[in-house]
Image 1: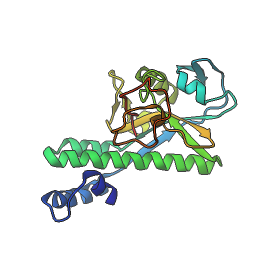
Image 2: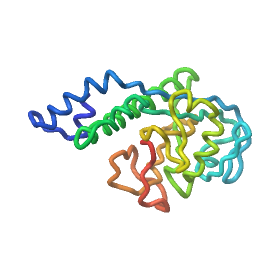
Image 3: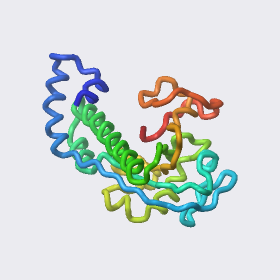
Image 4: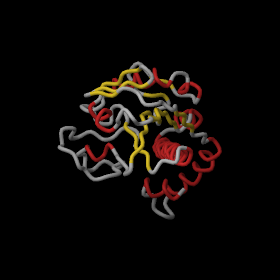
Amino acid sequence: DRIIYDRLRVKPGSSAERRLEALLPVAQALARPKAAFKIVGPQSAGESRVSLDGVVFKSDLLSKHRSEAQWAFPYVATCGRELDEWAKSLSGLEQFMANEIMIVTLHQAVRGTEELLRRRFELTEVSAMNPGSLPSEWPITEQQPLFELMGDLPGRIGMRLLPSLLMDPGKSVSGIYFRTNEKFHSCQLCTKADCPSRKAPFQGDGHDAGYAPAGH
């Protein structure tokens, strides 16, 4: 709960605090965050392309950070359709607050997936890359082959890819986890300094200036 209060900068004793206090028990009762992943064995990798289970991805970023010897873990995660439908029934400040609740719920689903991968496969660390997070490195159009690779798993957790290449529910994320010794964030290659979701300082060359990592 404290994370929500901090994100919304709710002042103690304010009307906003009372409204948030009324929303949280409902959200907690409805929340069903979900995630699914696949295990993909070593496949071919080349300059600007990677093939996973016969599905080809065109990405400089993916080919740089994944060698042919590595296993990969394509995944999807969502705050859940239950929260999404509830949020759509609200308006004004309550809907804005519900939006933040969904973001935090999605982050919990992602963290749980990372912890499961590290524990089950005895990995030192895992990092993820997400289509559209850095457009010139791995564009949003790569959502299509990623959902093709995932098969029926997104549908089984209530997710779908829209013709616009956005995901439904909106507070969802897709990507590929891979084994690393140190944590990698797309933020390291993004120069948007005021992004509220930034998780790491900029370390790149600035060619993707202005883009915030998707789903983080």
